[in-house]
Image 1 (spheres, rainbow, N blue to C red):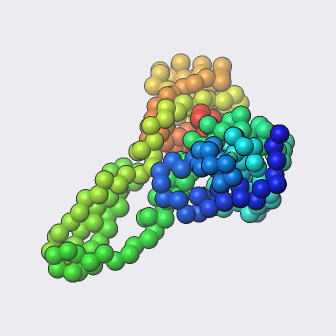
Image 2: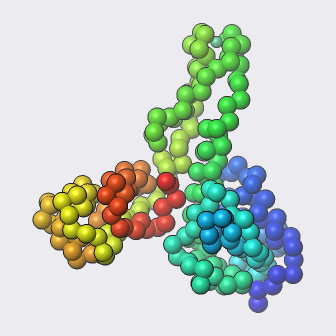
Image 3: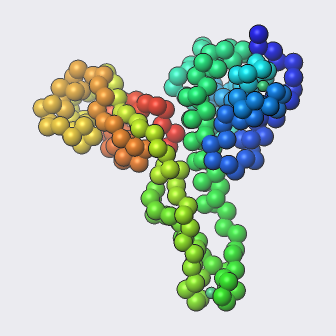
Length: 239
Ligand SMILES: [Zn+2]
Ligand SMILES: [Zn+2]
């Protein structure tokens, strides 16, 4: 039922490189025109060797090839190399989940490109090159102001993490050491008392926090600091 005889399906990759729209996937299939085109990549090693899949859930055109995976890509925890076959049957069953994740990765990638590019924009009032002020940390909008006359434009631009409306949960995994530091870190995330936090570590796995992307990002930093073993669901695309 899957067929890899139409190279047009490869045009789906163009979206990854050029599309500036928010949330481009599922994309229009270049073969049948239905909005059911998907992409998934999986990095196999630190040299960025990996596989690329492009497929359509409607007409079942697909392409699979070896690929140098771009640095911005993150693998989903849903799959290991062993799960992935040339035919995208298993991938297609998770297409909604994959699309949501890929759209977030693309938003993060676009955000980095926007922040890196600093084209001089002349001030409307006096012609001086304006200065772009980036949001501090992860919060806030972006503004562009003139260093000479003070003319400014506040933009409604926000970091992808602030635009992410998903609810994430942090699951504490088995195998964490019971130490003063680990108990304290789990306590800061789970908002329980120290005794209860110790019990959470001893009887893991447990969901210890639910919240939006920004809240989860803060909690993630606390846990990473103490090398706590945990998993965020759905897959968390932010560093
Ligand atoms: Zn199609
Ligand atoms: Zn000016």
